[in-house]
Amino acid sequence: IYWALTTLSTVGYGDVTPTNFNETCYALFVGAIGAVFTAAVVANVTSFFHATELSESNNEHKLNCIKRFMDRHKTPHDLAHNVSEYFDYIEQEQEGMDERALLSEALP
Image 1: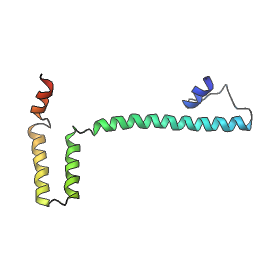
Image 2: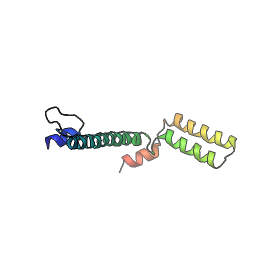
Image 3: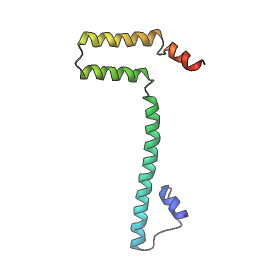
Image 4: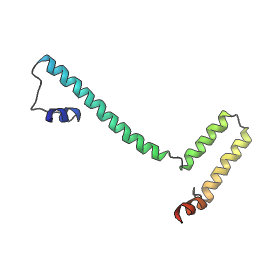
């Protein structure tokens, strides 16, 4: 168990070493699996924090989605500009918060 945990966690070990070619190959294989496992854990944690940053409640994310929608549907430039300015206005006036939605969630 000690060897498996230290190998999979990629911490390494010095007191348990492979003694022949087969053990060396096995140790390399398990070490590679440990490195991939560690990378997957780090990637999942990073993805979680990135997903919370780009949540649907993020106004910048909403504006980017609307801009992409308008680009795909070839919205006239003047209309797209007006929509962008409207979102900027809402962001400045309400400081990015929908007061009615906030109060309806907070109050019974």
